[in-house]
Length: 616
Ligand code: GTP
Ligand code: SPV
Ligand code: MN
Image (cartoon, rainbow, N blue to C red):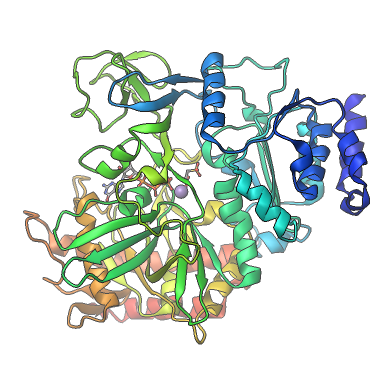
């Protein structure tokens, strides 16, 4: 009955007050006889010691390894993983310290259906959905139910964190509070299941729980990206947006980039929120196809945004690296990403050539030896032209942001960079123009609330259905979406200068299914229009029912060749009538009484504009 005994231990440990008064010796005793494999437990801040002692008793690891984030440590861990067969080196002379990793094919993406926000009050997490409707904005579990699922941590071992010794100093100097994260692959020895690809995991037992009241995260069973890099979506979005709401700032699924006008030298910073696998990494470090701008990357996935005392909104990137989609990435579409990952990078679920190069869809013209034999992401022989995919559609590169050739010198500046525009977008094959500007903050927040996109391989969804992904945050919402919108709306007050809000769509197709817009480096042409709007340039837009559209000729199309402007910018009335109705229905059903009145009114007014056919 070991399980019984251990689960009652969890109850004891939950009594934080008791633990708080424990003397140091007791905490150390709780470590039992776990050998310290590395580091000095006694040098850790007391709060960290207590946290570790608690979970060591429950997880029963073979040893305790305290990370310092050093290069020597990274090398040691990589060698261990090579010995085990989890990683192997890409031997091509092109690279330095690049590794490939194949996961268990059952562990390849974020698992939204097993990701939870755990709050006592259900409506702190999810809005009041209409009777009979199935809520999709936020996933709630009571802390009690979560605790039942978390029994699985008993005896599971394994910890993962991004750490440097600086962290201990900051914790020791501050109030000792920190976001407590626990991760396990959920596959204790001796393993009950067959381990595939030397990738121990527990797909059936996946559980990713967030406890905003205690600022804790517990993730079990998956080693994949957003499921296991707890500093990323779990902390920097789901927990951080709770902290941000309390403290008056924003934690968003947004890239941050700087665009310097080469003539004037003026740099404009923008943030863009696109759903997963919809183009943030590509845009954040794009190589302009027109000579007017220098682009620099501050971040590619997450932004923390705060108004300073003068009301200027500043953004920082809370991450250290990029975890980018591989397929489609090449020297033509995103040379900066390619150059970033030539060293010190890990490639997950990509294919490998017999010459020791990585390979994925989109690299056909770039591998040195076209007839080289290839091993696909499943470890099977594969060659160009074969059916199936060489790389998993959600295969990723993981590399230090500092290696990006156009990383911004201020990318780690604590003050952040001043933001002039927010840009929303998604994969919208029909109806949605290349770019439009909202009429103002309230209308812009409504535009963000209505973001939709084709499903992608970043999570477990199959097919290409168009899904709502409001503010590109649906999988990352940390609290009631109605309150989230309220928080956004509340920011427009003196002295705050709120950014302009735009919407873009790189993915509109013609009747043959071909993209109407070349995308990638040519997206600079749209960004140029946005920057000029931010600078107050006039006579470059026309009013439409959904926002300001570019006037013909106001986007620089020099050198682009044939382009169907009318098709790119048309607003089919029947499409927008249906879209507006569908969005109203969606927000009424999903956010119900929690939907701010302002958003309801904005949608209604937009519906009227569409009806009245104020199409210019
Ligand atoms: P996450 O890391 O999941 O948040 O994704 P992301 O938003 O950073 O998307 P990313 O830039 O990695 O792009 C995802 C896919 O979209 C890749 O296959 C890209 O090649 C493709 N893509 C990106 N930008 C464009 C574009 O402008 N046009 C087209 N057609 N495809 C694009
Ligand atoms: C996303 O899905 O938005 C990602 C990848 O950026 S993951 O880290 O898996 O969340
Ligand atoms: Mn992302």
